[in-house]
Length: 283
Image 1 (spheres, rainbow, N blue to C red):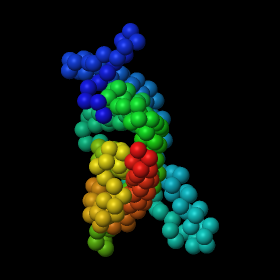
Image 2 (image 1 turned 120 degrees about the vertical axis):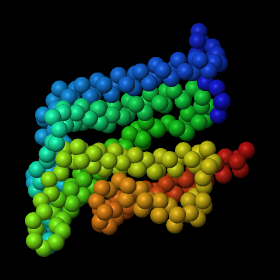
Image 3 (image 1 turned 135 degrees about the vertical axis):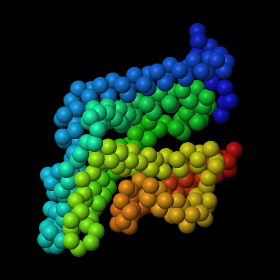
Image 4 (image 1 turned 30 degrees about the vertical axis):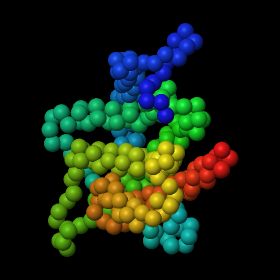
């Protein structure tokens, strides 16, 4: 990999100075900020619809995840045995500016999620000139795969992990007299929903990380298999961080797909390793 970026000017490749790198980085960052701001303003313009249908979705009894799970329970002949009771809570705002600040936070978080493919594309455009032709060819489709795993993880967090977490926490009772009522704050709910959604989206990048590290030779399939037990512990820690609830069930819901992605990373690394072995034998 080249240590310095190259730019094409007048049909020739010229080496860029450190100041040129900073200037190029500044423009990339500016375009990324503009993209997030644009999507954030669009979301803010429809904040009521976004809040009612998206943000409050996991708290609604008509949320698709609750309905689908109940339908599945009846389909397999278990009745309502595995139906997940929707959260029965009312959110509260404890300060005058809470709702306004929350609307701003929702707009920017939503703007980041919506603009994620473009943000990664800008990052890719910045590092691409430093790659060799072979490295660029091997990284073909990177934007698609990174975006796919990010949105898959975010969808998993929103549609599966968030409903289960909020259902468990809101219906959990301490003691037998049932005199304690859960009234979460709006800030607390949005923070938990954000952590679950974005945390799962980033955690689902495991196969991409495995692909990149295998390409540059930092890991091998043998290494991943040897240290699988340590990876299990690390994944459990990540699951505990992502899930706001302390129960083992919600953590297992996160652990299982992450462990599957780790195993997928081993398969990806093994394929890359075989390709490298063939190229070395060919040379």
